[in-house]
Image 1 (cartoon, chains in turn yellow, blue):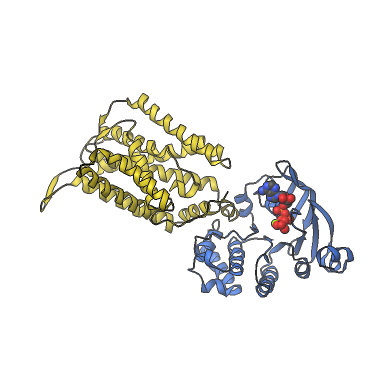
Image 2 (cartoon, helix red, strand yellow):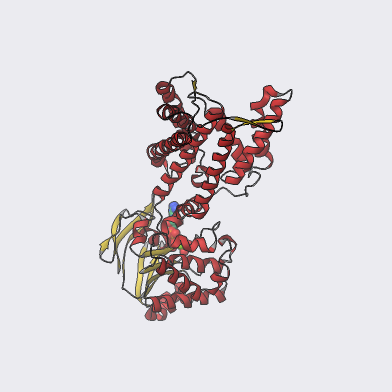
Length: 270
Length: 235
Ligand SMILES: Nc1ncnc2c1ncn2[C@@H]1O[C@H](COP(=O)(O)OP(=O)(O)OP(=O)(O)O)[C@@H](O)[C@H]1O
Ligand SMILES: [Mg+2]
């Protein structure tokens, strides 16, 4: 989404995801475990904290470079990413931690399948957040402004949009979602460490490219396809190559359909 | 209403405006004519805050707006319909108009503005849900003007509204521009390469050449001026 508005890939996104999980980890210690309201506090607290972090990162690292070559911003994004990873190791410690059980969890059977309410909560929250994001982007004034700024920042200024505010908002929103992602991830794979964002970040990037970058339903579809493919590969004799398959998909998509499955072909303006 | 004094603007080492001054009275239509690369677009962009002046001053309604950010200038009622229209092509006609009213909070006023825009450009109403990028060039120009009108302008700057539009539509659009000026009392600065047309609808004109104002006067008189005729009106 940040890409859609700003036309650059925020490599630090996956580290905000990690910070979100850690904020959740610490918040999870102060609220009672395994309650719905406690879980929601952890979720929204982490989202809020990361929204502020995202706005701060944009303000300090990216805004001064705006208007300059995209390459500078990309390099800075990698720098920010490394900064967050290593600060994470300093502040949170490099050793993996166990993420608390924040929502109540119970297993139940549906025919031959066993579900945990945890998994259902993850899916439910993810779907709700996606719907909320779609509504914000397509039904609100600030969302329309985000799309307008992404298309033509000059024209947006000429109708009175303060682009700085819209860009801050975009970063805040994107980072809040990254934090939610970190929490949801940690609920399912409850071992967290400062480098936990790297692999999911790369895969999210593959999913986004697969679906058509800057396209929200596309990214969800890309994620779903990637997930299914990985699960199949995992269950086959090629399971060692589970992580490699994502990158094979990336290469194939970039070769044959660079706009992604749902994306429209656009010509890069220089 | 608008006073520009000794404005210098450059792109890096290229000087685009070498100290121009002009003034626009409230309620008038004034035109700025000149050939390719004369600096017309640069002038408008500097007035609306998209470009920063190297030196000089822009005053609007008595206040110095030279250093203001574009959105603050729009908030004062100075709207700019840019060259090439710059509509939001992936947004619908409706959303484009809504973006035009980005700073406007009065819903009643917005609805009235919309009705007015649809009354002068009925085609926009027919195409309200259409993606703006699929409109014809003339319709996009109507939309660009409509979007600016949604911002309740006191002063409207139009950059080559005739560019790339069928001749029949050009005269419609110019009629509407005059109508907007007369009935809404909006002051207009019109930039044109089509000098004939611009001098017909305006009361006063400035001629710009390589970043300098080389001639100015009542549009009626300039139309009769032999020298101007030779350069801009094709003899
Ligand atoms: N972004 C830019 N970078 C460098 N030079 C520019 C830029 N934009 C305009 N110029 C130069 O500034 C001068 C004035 O350009 P401007 O666009 O204001 O002319 P114009 O009168 O609007 O012309 P046209 O009628 O072709 O639109 C030209 O010499 C042009 O080459
Ligand atoms: Mg121009």
